[in-house]
Length: 102
Image (cartoon, rainbow, N blue to C red; front, side):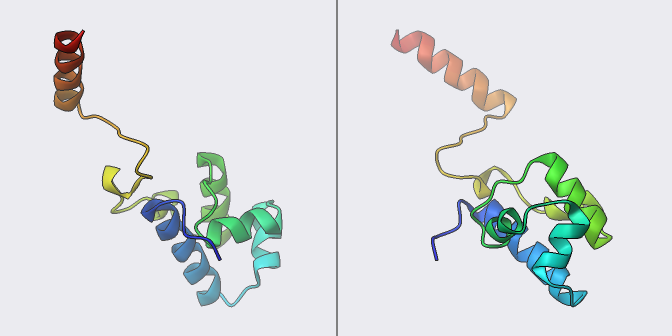
């Protein structure tokens, strides 16, 4: 099995699987309830998927949890290393750095 896309993807996948296991339902049953393809659900549970907001809401509804449960505690450090979101202060510093370099 491949490595998860990111810590965020691994977190969401582990949570989906734990909630599904707690309800003792199969992956197929959850996929049907959430109106997802079972292979898409498998990728999410394995940390390989990158579920959209819509998919997170579908899963939350099917698992009877609030959608925010999936992102609680996650931050920028949990994103893939190639994504670098900036705070307002970071963004301004980066703009100053770029303008002084050019």
